[in-house]
Length: 133
Figure (cartoon, rainbow, N blue to C red):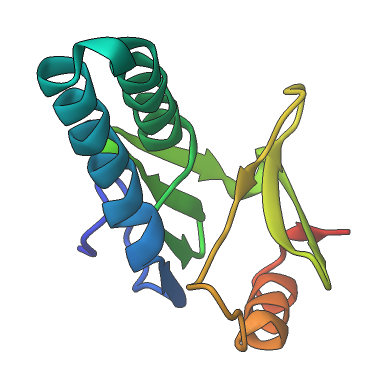
C-alpha cells in the first residue's frame, strides 16, 4: 500500500515546493505581528493573514502522481485526490495545472521555483493515461 490512502500503486512522480509550504505561514505570522504590535497597521496585518490563509487553502505545496490519479497536499493538513478519469492536466511553458472536469479553476502542480522537470512530469502523465492538454 502506498502512502496515499486508497491507492495500490507506488508514486510515479513526486513534486514539492518549499516556497508554497513555508510562505503562507510566514505571511500569516507577519500579519499577526503587524496586527498585534502596530496599531496603525492593523489593516495591513489583517490583509496579510487573509492572503496567507487563502494561499494555504488553495495552492498545493506537494503533489504525487500515481496510476489512479493525483494526490494534492495543502496547508492546514487538507488533502485532495483527483481521479485520473476526472482530471485534465495542462502542461506548457508556464507550468502544469490539474483541473478537475466540471470545475472552473485548477490546481498548479509546482515543483519548486524553477521547474526543470516539467518534461518528465508531462511524460509520466502521458505514459499513465492522463488527459494532457
